[in-house]
Amino acid sequence: MKKKDITILLIKDGEIIPISDNKRCSRNSHLMSYFELKNYKNIWLSSNFDHGSKKFIRERYIQREGKRIILFRGLGYKNNNSIKRLIHTLIFSLKAFKYIFINRKEFTHIIISYPTLETLILLTPIINFYKKPLIIDIRDKWPPSTKQGLIYNIYKNLNYKILRKIHINENTFLLAVSEDLLNWFKNITNNKEFKNSAICPIGSNTPFLGYKEQHIKNQDLNFIYVGSLGINYDVKGIVKALIKLNLNCDYQIFINIVGKGHQLKDLKKLATNNHNLKLHGFLNEKEIRNISRKCQIGLCPHTIDGLLPNKLGEYLSYGLFIISTIKGNCQNLLDENKVGFTVDRNFLKLQDAINLYRQIDHNSTSKNIKEVYMNKFFSEKIYKDKMKNLNKFIEEKNCI
Image 1 (cartoon, rainbow, N blue to C red):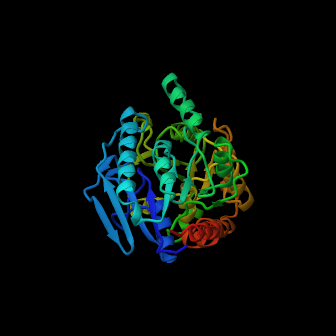
Image 2: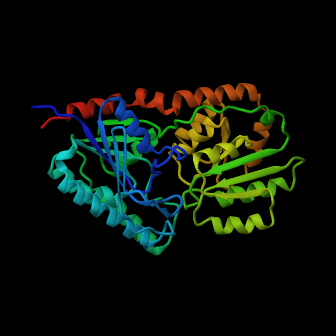
Image 3: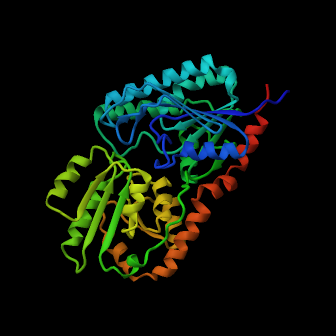
């Protein structure tokens, strides 16, 4: 068999597109940078709708040093849980299907991110037909079981039913951001013994900022949450708990929320009577860094266990202690390295977490945070360390 130059087609909508240096790096941005180091060419298919800001991007095509990003015209949506978003995703998936059919000779491998299931379902048949090696990048448990409702339950059960019928063969590779997530995907697709896999956190390329002296000496506490205000994070719940604690302590608690989503309306009501709560909306990387320099604790009130969200790496890069609700790999990482505290989802242990932070040796904690970040989340290191199995798969499946 003759080998050819490797070109990887990455398919993911709804992720931060690197149209400027102030944009936070997404999983696909990290993957493309890593593949460049391996001398692989990259093509990324997305839409021109920015999921975070809910705005359309003017650019339709981005070319940067071996990277090509093709942005299909998207429908767009205002509500993450709307029918319009589902239609947007289906339209994107059909356009990706058409692109694969027309340009099938331009790439050797395909990476599809999970979620979304709709894209995976629509594209798997044509990928298998052309016998293209497929890499499924598992980012999240979807659909989440935390949301309820008749229509949603029908949608959720249908998704899980389809997932169980997805055929994973030796021409497939599973990449996951955590061990718990990889095992979940294997179980739900009835592929418990599947071996072609690797675990690599999303990571962050932000230089370590570390603790500032003011963080250690200041009696007041500044919290920050960065991310979606959607159904997977109980931001409103943890904010209400912090506001309640602030009424009964001898220091001030300040809360910074960065992001957009359906919880924003309720948070605005809370902010009306609580001047210690600041809602910043959607910000770029530089703006988030400036706010984080004044903060000590990063919040991760996720409603799903077994995940290792990217905001952990971002918080650690800012030198922040972490308060999380995620059991599994995330809790073990925080506990073993003494860089955070896991609370219950009723936030009854939130005071215990704050007390722990106020009592710890901050110099020692700062060293721990830097070590964990550099060894477990800094993208330049972890992608080199964690991708050996994937590299082997890509090279072995590169023939015509």
